[in-house]
Amino acid sequence: MLYVKLAIGGLLIFMIFSLFQAMVSMLKNDQEKNMSKYIGRRVLASALIIGLILIALATGIIQPNPKPY
Image 1 (cartoon, helix red, strand yellow):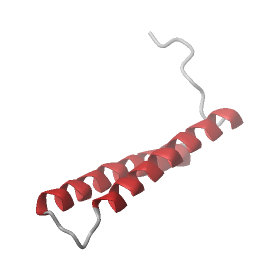
Image 2 (tube, helix red, strand yellow):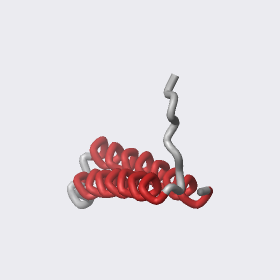
Image 3 (cartoon, helix red, strand yellow):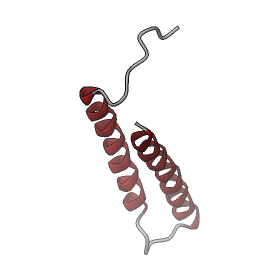
């Protein structure tokens, strides 16, 4: 269970890092480094996070909160 949480946390940190890389690329107006590369990495990380959560829920590694209040 700890490894799943660490993987999700690491992917979230990677998403934030990729978002800031895209912002720097946009502000510099850098034509050599395409901003869509960073945004694509962020979308891939999002898909991996969702897939990891769904697999962990399906296998019972993590349990959803039964009472959200």
